Structures are given as C-alpha cells and as structure tokens.
Image (cartoon, rainbow, N blue to C red):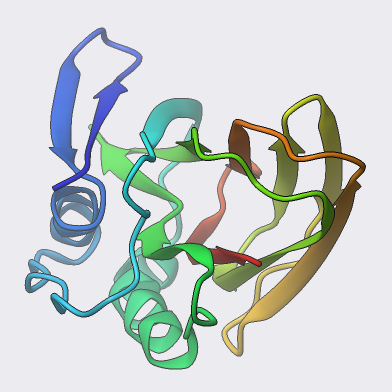
Length: 190
C-alpha cells in the first residue's frame, strides 16, 4: 500500500492510502457517502514511487451541486480512464476536499526513482469536473509544463510530451488544480 502524508493549513498531519482514504475522505466531506475500496486490479502508482500530496489554495466552499457531483466525477473518470500497459499511472483522485466549510485544492505530486530510457515520453492528464489544472513533467534534469483546458463533465485530456536525450531519473509528475477546482484527476505516463 502506498501512503501519502498531507498537512493541512492548520498543521494537522494526515496519513492515508492515496487511492482509498483520500477518495473516501473527499467523498464523505462533499457528499456524505463513502467510497468503496478500489479494485485490486486498478492501475495505481508503480512500485518504486512515493506519491505525496500538499494541501493548498483555500477557496469558498464549492456550490452544493459541484460538491455533490464529485462522486459522479470520480465514477465517470474511473469508467473512462484506462492506462496503457506499462504506463506509470494514477487512477481517479479528487482535486481537493472540504475542511470546515472551505474547499481546499490538493496538489498531486508523484515521484518515481526508476530510470526512464532516452526518447519521447507522453503524459496524458484526464480531468472530469469543473475548474482547470496546470501540469508539470520532470524526468531527470529535463522538464515541461502546460495548462489543461477547462475540466468538463465529459473529461478533458491534456497531453504533454518531453524528449530526453539520455536515460534519466527520477521522474516527477505534478498536477496543480486552480483554486476552486472540483474534479476527478488521473494521469498516465508512457
């Protein structure tokens, strides 16, 4: 089980499985329901990764409809997102959570210490919901970044490509939701 440590703005440290507790906490806070455990066959961070999340950007609580739709966004993206075989990937996770009536977006940052081969690498970021994202892909000393077009209920996809001249490590994927973004996020790196 891969665990993430999150520190809220009030200094409270939370430790949870990235795909189970984070999703369940966001769903409970936003919809009053809890998520089931993820499918054991689902694509999650590969062995050798150390995902971490950092809570940022307090915003007014999202409109009731947006928060209530978070569970639907997560289910929709889970159904639509399939990582290609051999891809480094993260399944659907929420873009934030409610804390004392304030929506807090969460930066998703995954690290993989394995060496990636020289050549072309493609990061596909999927966003189902409302708001927007910025993404950064870093492999060794090389990096690229982009803004994702507005997230939407039908899933927006942004592809970022990076060519590395030599094998390199580590790989870091950073996805930063804009303040107020209420969405499900996933990515695949090939």
